Length: 79
Image (cartoon, rainbow, N blue to C red):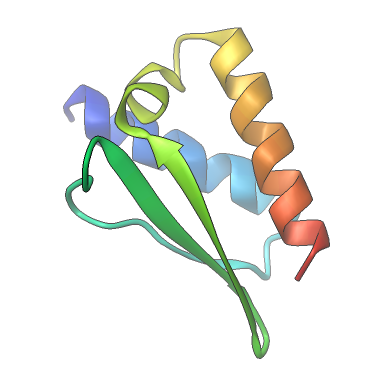
């Protein structure tokens, strides 16, 4: 598994750890070095952007993990 796939997997783990009901759609490739990620819970959907570098660094960098986790928590609480 390459770094990008490891990062996507870690992102999914973060979301499931916060709320297992939330469905996640991560694009295959980034647009302008950003991923537009869809979080859906029931009829509600929220989009967040995460940089390509953050996805790659997510499994190995605690500071990135903390930042992304906060972004995901905020988005999920708004659903």
